Length: 233
Image (cartoon, rainbow, N blue to C red; front, side, top):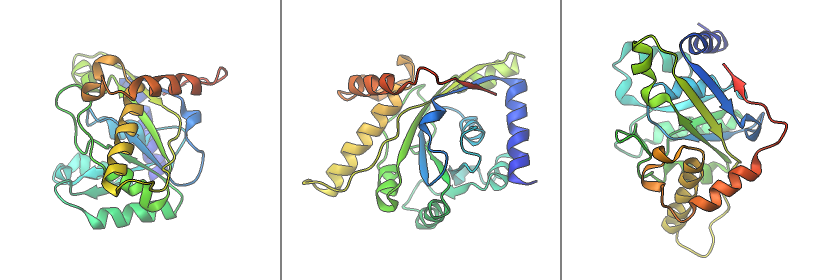
């Protein structure tokens, strides 16, 4: 099955099974390399990102622990996803991500590195910022809520409400008068505060009291365009 036909199929299933709305897609550049950085609460998050109407070229880094799950493996292959070994510095995955950027495509990444098991944001790793810095690629944060309980609601014949909120783009500046590790830590904290600002308070996890959060909430509110309309699947 071709990727575009697959996207239409997944979008159709999401339309039937859920009530999914994409907000702030005007914050996503319509073309060119970009990282879409998301929180990660559910296996449904990757299909939701994949169906973003703003970037039909979307693909994602996906943990290779799902390789043995035939349905998920088929999904990742058809969606042209990139397997990554989260237990080490996976240089093959990084090289493939670089090729995606060279082709001017969008790449979805979960900075936390794994699916949260605590119902909120967990501490992020610096890999997303490192990748953006190496390839000079901007990052668009997105907060997903509603996916964490979606499968349970669908099991009982309900249509879960799922929201994806995209915030203003984050450009990664060159190293300043600080060490590389300090820069990576600082920018990772900023990215996660941006994602937290797009989430309901109960999903902000370890970043709910971060000192950058009020600033990022204000930045997010200022970025909302009065004429922008949400996109419903």
